[in-house]
Amino acid sequence: MTASPVTAPAPAPSAPASEAPAASSAPSATPAPLAPTDTSGHEQVVFCSDPKSGLRAIISIHNTALGPALGGTRFYPYATEDEALADVLRLSRGMSYKNAVAGIPHGGGKAVIIGDPNSDKSPELLRAFGRFVESLGGRYVTACDVGTYVQDMDVVSETTRFATGRSPENGGAGDSSVLTAFGVFQGMRAAAQHLWGEPTLKGRRVGIAGVGKVGRILAGHLVEDGAQVVVTDVNAAAVDALKATHPGIESVSDVAALVRSELDVYAPCALGGALDDDTVDALKATIVCGGANNQLVTEGEGGTADRLVARGITYCPDFLVNAGGVIQVSDELLGFDFDRAKVGATAIFEHTLEVLRTADEHGTSPAAAADHIAEQRMAAGSPTIWLPTR
Image 1 (spheres, helix red, strand yellow):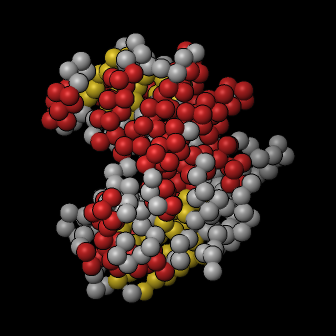
Image 2 (image 1 turned 90 degrees about the horizontal axis):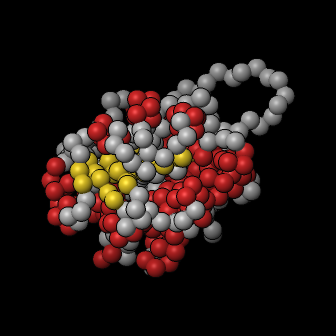
């Protein structure tokens, strides 16, 4: 094995994908935007190579002001190493904000394995990856992400103590979709409280785009709460299975039809990039609150978050409301207790109310308000990088 670390001092967190508040009103030259592969805002980036197993991976630790970095491992056939690096830098930074706003004692990190998970994944490769995770001594704790699953984390855990998202048989929390969906539901209840004065979706019409694991569980919570639920998914079998369980659920042909429906709440629960300009302009819903990651297509000032505000749509930031999964896997480090983890996910209700109230008070978007709260928490953390206890 060989590893090439790229390290830097622990800087203040850089502005995330959504807009950040101005730090000063003093005039200054406008800096050139950072290249997608600029590592200067990250504490440590490690390139991992194990020719014997075919492993090529990158581990990115963005910020450990609040504790060891926690974030999943994505297994994806990136076209180039630069493409993989750009993705892991973006994802790890996002995890810093997600973990901070969720109130858990972790910084942000992420890993990517370059390759096709359907053909390149092997136990030998996963064990090699686990050895690199172990070499960081706990500064990075991994979990599942796109292309990696519970059974993969079981294999990774054979060579590292710092793998979460394992099966219950191996001391893990199992499928994190359970509390991810529960957390989204709490965020939705908070938005209802904020706008309509009651923390319930009873009698409201909620549209869910994507009824895989998270969307399916979310639909069940909404039905139980008395909401009218309408769904769509590219997988017709998933829709049919959900309607067999909940016969009162309606369905439409595609996402375009769903966003143009008369909805109170729109819940994107499939792929990222759910809120492009055309979707925002077509939406009839008053609230957007869903489990999908990276929903805002255009980030920063004047981007999608501001476009939603201009249309009078209340957006619950995705990294805020879908944090139930990371809360669930982080509890594994304490010896997993579902009830304790559920208490943490229940707090997403109060976190969402805080963000929405802050946005109203400061006349900004909920995305910017969530970023600001996360930045305050990171700034109040340790001024030095997190090191393992000896």
